[in-house]
Length: 254
Image (cartoon, rainbow, N blue to C red):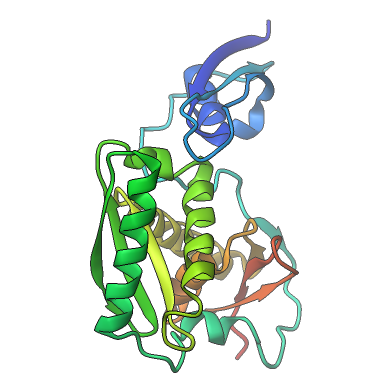
């Protein structure tokens, strides 16, 4: 008899994983029905609710729960090796920070703008400078309502960061950019991506087959490239067009 289970999650992938774990099977061994979709928008709070159906599968012990940091749910696509591009245009810019250098004046301007914007929202959130990294001014957002600024897979936070950079484009020095982290989401997400990158690289070396990750925004592709730049036996590059641009992890050519 088919086995079913219902579960909820902040993202659709979270809900699917929770339902699959309730059945003691892998996500790929289930069929899913979305019973309720999370409300979209910057300040949405509702969760996804799904029903998972697993038929004809032997029971397996549920996978141990991992920390809250999100990881891309689907396994990377594995394909046969092909000749890597002689020059990878994406990997180099994503790994290097760029020639511009952020200054204290840039951080002051960024903090002032973000503080005023947050005040207008009426949310209990404060901004603070979390250091300068090359051409980046890093701002940290904290407070009771900070989770409302993250969104599904950081989508709301990415949108806010994009708008902030557009607003500051004429104020900050040439090439200087702003990064936002809300409640430690970016750091936990980066740790999850680094772990994924190492797992994928190990599989690529073992199988001698390249792997293609799910589409990621530029700053997350940069995390993958940086995590694997010193990993023996693999090269990385990006392919495709935004917003579907993906990182490819391939066996290193001798």
